[in-house]
Image (cartoon, rainbow, N blue to C red; front, side, top):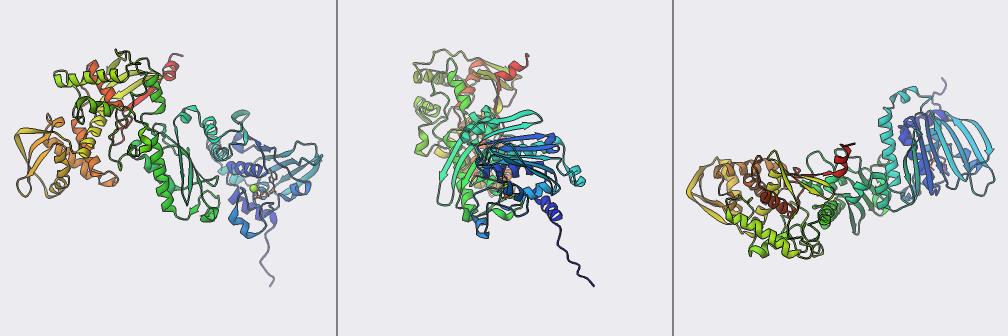
Length: 616
Ligand code: ADP
Ligand code: MG
């Protein structure tokens, strides 16, 4: 009987290898552009037709290839980049397996034109399904020009497997993003179906992000940076309001190579904590640098998943770097919004829109100002003004009811204090107009358009921060009840109440245990005096028990969130001008005026361009 083991022919082997390397048009783009970068190109053009089905062309001004190298480059395991196995561990170039060109040439029609600077003539090679059709000298520019036509023409099943143009273009764009973001000093021109998609000149990372993702995002980026023994982290995170539903603008690079890293992604997203509503994803561009010997690049064939030594430590460093960055730059109020306000005619001082110095619980909110380095960001804050003015911690956070002279006085005192603080700039007479919509929203103008505020949520945020301060400073004021309320609790509720009783009593409740499962509510915080104590307690139990899924919320947060919900006015309340103004100012003095403590959006700025577009 004859032997049955045969060596696969090269072209079959290449086709099999191609299955791994060339999954779709975007893989070809990736491999070709990475080769161009490895060849020292400073300018690369990427030309695509029909989402890569008809043509993928990459033209570079790199060092080109000799006629022999040009021919050799299509051989399997042909590479100029490694010669011994150890080289694999110190990869600085992009490709390193010498498989890409062989694989691409196995499943497409490829034309290569290349010339080195020292050669008078270049080389043109045509190859299809691994078969060399022609090779001849040609006049050519220095560099390399690859045209890959009719991808998968010889594997109909694979060609049919390609997704819609839209999907394939999306993959290509993703790939291009990863490349241009790691090579800002290289010029790129990207053309899709005869239209220029990107035209990028050499620039720095920040400019590159702006030119690829737009000015709006750029204005809302916060730099991050930290250097440690095990990792250096640089890059940018976008402010919470720039979040989006998809995750396509979440970039991690390690040693300037794109990577997909769900665990580190969690480190970043959890730093945003409650700043983002459900289902929204932050955008970030984060560059890690580690000793190459501490990572294992090759655990995944497409080389985007990477294993790190000390992942947990890096997680922590990353998480706090993002938190710090967001806090340092005072994510809320946003820069653009701040500018809006400060450029506004009657708001010329920069001291106006600043969060209070006394901040919320650090574990809830990363934006605290305990770090002395951050204090300069909050000069004469509103919080301080209030303190100076009233001579005590703020205890006047109820919305002013016009019948209530104390509240009116308070509204006035805020006004006069602004005048005092900003006397050179402040006109002394507010021209800011407020309009109430459906007794639910407050509209006002800003430099860049119209601000729409959900009044109930704004009030919730204000009350939340108020109660957090009360909890931290134990400065609640009790309003004694004329008729103490006795409540009887289930064993479970009893446990919950006992757990929070100390906190409740520091912020102005007076709750005493009068029997094994009987409690008497003898007083409530002044802010809640008008409310039904029973309902407040019920709401609290709800918050405490449902919050268990989110371990990161501390008890104080839960209490403050719950009480804020009880204390906030219900929507549907008609507000007077001064009341709207007061609410607006107090919201602006909050450490976060964009989202409620449990992540619901409070305000939206409708850009003037959006309004103008409606009149086109
Ligand atoms: P690898 O990049 O892993 O070495 P490839 O199959 O992608 O393998 O490329 C094979 C070889 O062809 C490279 O090592 C390089 O020498 C040469 N090459 C490919 N593309 C270019 C280019 N654009 N400019 C110069 N040389 C190139
Ligand atoms: Mg390569």
